[in-house]
Length: 114
Image 1 (cartoon, one colour):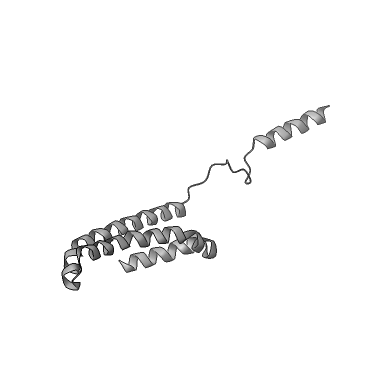
Image 2 (cartoon, rainbow, N blue to C red):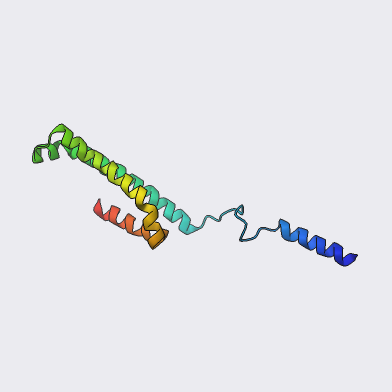
């Protein structure tokens, strides 16, 4: 009888203890997680910076290349279009190379491309 009670108590303790296979367990926020979140925010800032620079340079580009207003709008719209294409295709790249390498390469291209 004592063995049954101990076994039941042990099963109860096991059921209340969090395990690694439990999807409801809280996630740890590590230093690397904070760094990646910061880099993602920095990339968003860089996109805003690029759009702002292109807006200011739009008149110069239009005059230099002889673009019409519609062509200039297509030029500005291409930034958002290619950002959308990149976002929609990111899952394929992530599955092939992994999240970390995809993020690192995209961040480096974006930062050095700016």
